[in-house]
Structure formats: structure tokens, C-alpha cells
View (cartoon, rainbow over the protein chains, first blue to last red):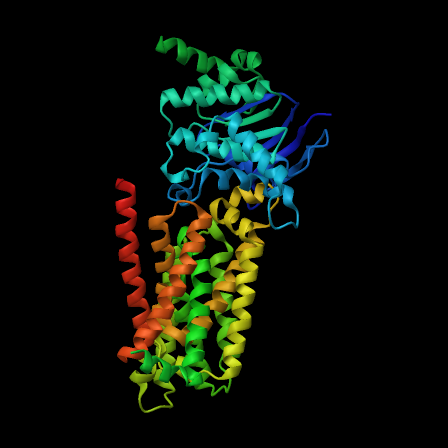
Length: 235
Length: 279
């Protein structure tokens, strides 16, 4: 069974659907990129996947022993976080909150997990630094390490490169590709179709027409052809 | 000077005032950090105006124990303000401004129409700026305040990690299965209780100072959440204690003296923070 199966899903607010009959399945090790214009429903889909919001109709099934709260989430930064007096360690450790159950404090294993994930993303030397004093790319790494603490399997990334400069953006993409190669399933929202085509194994295009398929199929589709002609025009 | 203090401390009401003052300062500073970061700095002010409005109704209805009306009304307002958290339709500052101004206006209106006392502006002034009520506390009130304060501190220590997580990122917390709405509700109720308690100490208008100054002072110096929280609690307790002592020695109003000390502490921390960063 697939890791996540979406069946006849309709998305929207207050029973008014603006994306209808979405069907797709995400398998272990996939790299799914969700692209589409602003307001097409990308973020709504992501919130529905995280169960922050109810779907208008249809359902999302989790398979392969994936629990509801085992999805690592990298949200977009909020204004509150920009000047938050918290150390890197504290933030990464808060990714373990779903593991605690009723226990009020983090145990040794969770602290070790946080340290491992900081090391994995190369931010261990920054662990006592203040979050608000880090660069944009470093902040994203911190939030990514936190997301990794919450999951072994699936990462959901909401525009992970928003506001980053080109160099840091490509570093971020390489980092995500690395995690994908280590066996973590990636679901990413992006405006950046070029990067989606470059890194993703599957692409979901939401808009007036919904497309879902592998990267190769996407490049052959109408939406993909439009993108290809644009790219060729730029050359 | 110490003779004078020793003389004053022989009176139980002075001791009560110091105990209650320090406890309220401690509680309000603990939650102050969360509130300032959630952009709810003004909630103390807003809720205290609600409490003022409720007190006006209570005095018109001639209730013997106005807490029975004030506390529930304030808790409900706090819940309404904080419940929706960062996904609210009317954002924090606007919602607080609405509730605060409306409650203040209605409270004053009701007091004016159904006036029972000859010194109306005096009554309003003492409710808003704190009166001598901290010096007229009964033993029962001191116990109530002590028990509630201990409860607040215990809840805060027990849920410290969750409060941090929910404050930093509500949506992430929800996504990993933390009951963020539940914690928002918990925070709202605690805030309301503290504010109703604090009204006795510094009055409606100055509660905000107790909530925000220690937190902001601590944030000038420290850069991680735990140190900020601990430092804010220490600053707040020291300021409240010395404020009360100064007000006794100098004969100044208790509430405004405490706030003045808080402002001074903020100035010191600001300078200290700036110097530390430069080095």
C-alpha cells in the first residue's frame, strides 16, 4: 500500500470547493512537487494533509504504518518567529513534542535525536545561537531539523526557499534531495517549476486543469509543454 | 530607614501586601514572555478594562462578592481573544483594542447612570490606577492569591515545553498532534485569573506594565527562551518587592511606584544588552 493515498479529495473553505476530485498516491521514497498559481489551493491541500483543516469531501489514507502525527512539517515563517528569543537547540527539540504524549519533558533519546538531526543538516555548531540572529538559510535548516525530529518517513515542505538568495536556494534544494536519497519521502509546495522539474520524481499541478504524474509525463503534458516553451524562450 | 521598615512590617497588612505583590508579579511575568511574543502585549490592558466594566456592573447590582461576576466575564473575554490564536480573522491588536475600549466606555457609562457614590471620578480613578485596596487585603484573600499563584507557577513549569512550542509555531504543533487550541485556552484562562488578581495591586491601567516590562527587559539581555523566562521572573519579583518598599518609605502610590521601578529596570537591561552586543 502507498504511504499516502488521496481519494476523490475536494478542497476548499466552508464546503465551497475550489479543487475537485483529486486522486493520487505517494509511495515511499517519492519526491512530489506541488506547483500551481497563487490561490490555486496548494496550501489548502497541505493543511488538509496535515489535518489542520477538514476536506470538503473525499479522504486521505495513510498506509505503511504511517501515523497521523508522523509527518514532518516545514511551515512558512511567521512574523512571530522573526524576533523570537529562542536557541537553535530549543527549537529543534520542540520537533519531538509529538513523541512525548503526556510526559511534560523531553528525555535523553529525544535530545540525542535533536542533536543527530542538527548534525545531519550542519547546524550543530550553531546550537546555542539565537534563532533570530541566523541568516535566512540557516533559519530554514533549523526548521528542517525540527521537522526531521517529528518524522522518519515523510516531510511536507511549504515553499522552503521563499525569500532565500539563489546560492542558498540551490543549497537548500541539494539538502532536500540528499534527504530524499536517504529514504525520506518529500512533498514540497513550490512556485519554482524549474526546480520541480529538476528534482522531483512526481509533479502535481493544481490550477484550472489538474495534472498528476511523473516528471517525464509532466514534461509531455500541456502544462509541462507550456513550461518547456517558456524555458526555451529564455535561452 | 530600617527602623521605619521594621515598624511597618509589624503590621500584617504590610506583610500581606508584599506577599501578594510579589506573587502577582511572578505570575504575570511568566506569561508575559509568551504574550509579548504572540503580539498580545496589550491584552493585560484590554482584559483589565473588561474587569473594570464587570466591576461597574457588580457595584451597580450591589453584589457583595464582585469576584463572582468579574472573574467569569474576564475569563470569557480572554478566551475569545486568545482562542483563535495566529489564525484569527480580526488580528490580536485590533480585537484587544475593540474589547478594551468598549468595556471601558460601558463601565464608565453604567457607573455614571447608576451612580451610588458621591465621589464618582474618585472611584473610577482608584479602579483604574489601583487604590489602597492592596493594603486592605484580608487573610482569606492572601491565601486565595497564594494558592492561585502556586497553581499558575506549577502549570507553567509542567507545560513549559508545550507553551514554548505552541508560542513559537502553532501550526507545526497542531501538525505533530499537540492540542494547540487546548493550550491557547489554558493560557487564556491563566491570564484572566492573573489580571483579576492584579487589579487589586496596581489597578486596571498598569497591569500591562507588569506583563510586558519584565519580559522585554529579559529579552534585551538573553537569547534563549528558558533564560528569558527565568530572568523575566526574577526581574519582576525584584521590581515588585523594591517598588512596594519604596512606596512605603516614600509614601507614593504602590502601583505606579512598581511600574516606575520596572521602567528603570528596562532602561538598565537595554543599556546592558547594547553593551554586550557591541563587545
